[in-house]
Length: 201
Image (cartoon, rainbow, N blue to C red):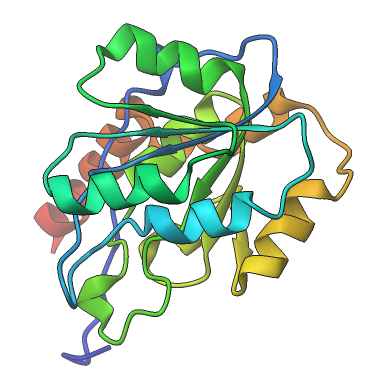
């Protein structure tokens, strides 16, 4: 739109074959670095903790990510005191896959209250990973993550909580079908098609 030319958007490939659906628990997962930078692409785990404080008992929130800002990380742990929230950092890929597999929901708050487009999630590979694991994926309505097939969008903390508690029909397997276009094979086909078109021109 900026340059006034036709364009083709090809997403980053995600190896969805590495993810699986497990026995789901009343568990919510978020994956993202623990850091805080004014105007940055913050993952806003503090917003997720605020939302989770409104959830009924019996639910668990797991926050996964590398600690890049220790002060912010410690402030989150204080916020989470007394809530069924578990922090995991520097975990292996196998454990991450298992956490995705057993979680019923994925929550993301990246872009919440952001003033600039650069502070939004540009694509959001974690959303594709969670959908490939059969997680209902709730993301803030802004940026590239909100355009991924299969996600559910929210604008306010109350809306995030209400959508989580809303009974929804459908199977986790249905979510996986929508993300097949982000697989390595699909993205490879999209590139071949585009290159072939350019060669013809």
